[in-house]
Each structure stands twice: as structure tokens, then as C-alpha cells.
Length: 281
Image 1 (tube, rainbow, N blue to C red):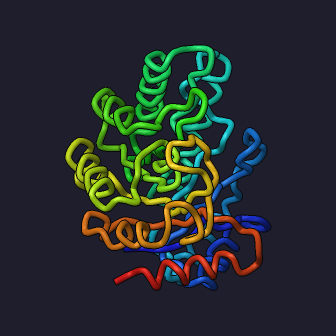
Image 2: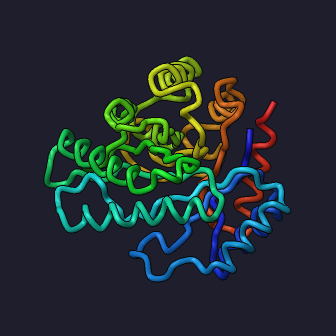
Image 3: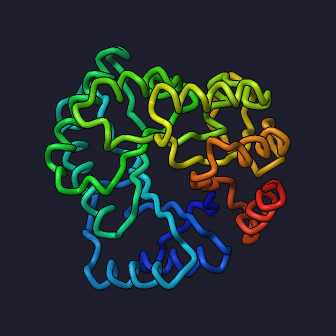
């Protein structure tokens, strides 16, 4: 397994590697640009080269880039839809340039439309994106599950299966499992048998190697609350015992576990990583 946190890229993007190295991370997640704005500037070539150089010299083996929040491939609005497709293409190219293995994405919101239409829009957009980036198959797009609020796709892994079954090149798809989102969506992963069933279904229906990244988060929201609020490891309503079962699960021995826990103190990441390391058998 690989273990790390979502790391800030403030300053220069390559400084994320230094922050990860200081925490002893073997995996990281980053935003390659401001997640709440449309692209302002492209990454500088010299910064990309330094990112790759520092990563090779570090303990970081897995890098995942998270898609910005504004992008929405499920939207019924054509202007946003077209702009989102263009941004996706740029982000896959940028992920490849950085040498990152994964681009983690939400599936978007079908607000003012229907779930069925949202899924069709998302699938159609991915086919366009994959055609435009057919030379970049080394980047795997990981579909993240959601907590189920509003009109967001992905609260059930049935949505993942529809997308896997419908996209023309499903070999470019994978899964990012967020533990807090699953719990908030009503999957009681506190029960070992429920967690086992979930991981078995993902492996059997989406592929044994589909689940590449786990967002290991405890949850402030209650089971089935649809509330997406992450908590510190072992301090939320999922609890350390359940997270220990997931961390040590044989189906996840090759996965990257990335924490998106609160950063409410300067030592929060270090503390949460320490708690996870104590859970590893």
C-alpha cells in the first residue's frame, strides 16, 4: 500500500513534493491549479521539470491530481458543458506532463435535468475527452463516489458501472473510494461484512484493479446523512476500528490511501498519518 495526504501546491508546484517528503508520504494528491477558478495560467516548463526531478528523488511513488470543482460534465447547460470538456482535456494533458498516474474526478451535477440525462452527458463527454487524449493512456481517470447530496452523480456505485459499461474505452477508467462519502451515502462501512461486500462488488463489476485510490477520511456526518464533512482519523462516526479493517483489506494491498482530513492545526496531517500507520498490520 501507499500512504499520504492531499498536499498544498502553494508557492511553486514542486514544493508539494518537499511537504510530502517531510511527512514521509509515499502517495500524494494535489490540485495542479486553483480548484475554484477556471484556468488562468499553464504550468511553467521549468516548474514541471523540477516537480518531476524532486519526485524521483523522494519517497513519493503515487501522484494523483484532483479535478477542479467548477468542471461539470453532467450539466444540461451547453456552455458549461463545452468549457468543462476543454478543461478536462487540458487537465489530462497536465497530469501526464507532471508524470502523475491518476486524475481524480467527481462525476458532476445534473441539476435542472435528470439522473439519466446527466449520466448520458457525462459518458458522451468522456468519449470526446478520451478521443482528444488518445496518446495519453498512461493517465487513468478515477471516478470518485459522492455523499449523495443534491443532484450529484456517484452516490451509488451503480453509476460507476453504467459509465464503465458505456464509455468506449473503459480501460482508461478506475475508481477512487472516499470512505466518508460512502458512509454519508448510507453504506455502513463500520460493519466489516458491508465493507467486504462493497470492495467485492467494485472488484467483480468494475475490475479487480479498478480501485486505485482510497480517500481515507472519517466522517462528521451520520450514516445516510448525505453530509460531506470529513473528520480526523478515529475521531468521527466511522471510527478507527472500521478504518483499520479497510486499511488492511487484502483487496486494497496495492492501493494508494490518501487522507483529506481537516487541516485545522499545523500538525494535523502528521497526527492523522501517525494514527493510520498505527492501524496498519
